[in-house]
Image 1 (cartoon, rainbow, N blue to C red):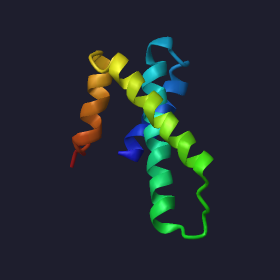
Image 2 (spheres, helix red, strand yellow):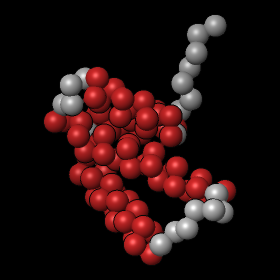
Image 3 (cartoon, one colour):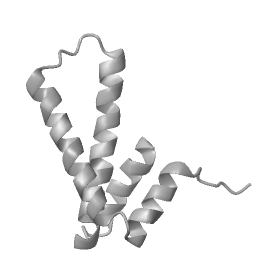
Length: 92
């Protein structure tokens, strides 16, 4: 899922930052970052989480959910959602 999000963010910038994809780019970027933070929280005992940092990521996830709610019925958002859950087919 992180790879799909990272790929979407890269394609957003290579497409010239279209306004129509801005919210979806933000959702994908936040999801990717949250995945990274989860791995840090699970496996990096040297990282010290502060209440402020944790609250910042809670706030960012809340914004992402609000953004997703605003765009979830758009075709591009539905395609993105499918790409998160369906494996990419490779040709032999």
